[in-house]
Image (cartoon, rainbow, N blue to C red):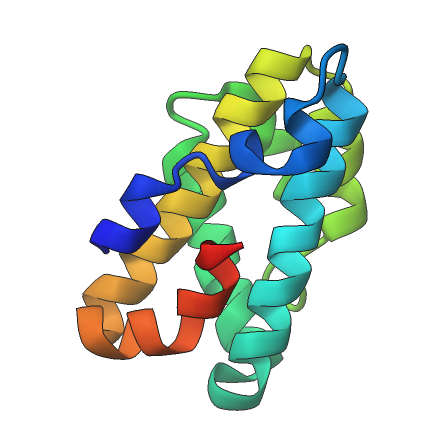
Length: 131
């Protein structure tokens, strides 16, 4: 988990989110890109419903600090609604989008880590959090 914590929030370190004048849309796109990578890495192992269940639980936990994330909860038990997440992130200011999106990613990683252990989580998502 240390690798993920060092690059947290991941979205804040992306080139598109870091450039001067970057807005919530750029931050949102960075978050969505990371979620797409997570889905691609985990879907073959956990299945779509497993990925979605962890996403839904992450939303619930993270929304305690970022209540606006609750708007994404609609149909996350069958698939992570990344389009809705992107829309909700774009409705925030850049700093809120970075903080909330990063917190959501961090919570997901922590949940996965608690289920699979640090070594396997790092092996599965190490490439995702390294970029």
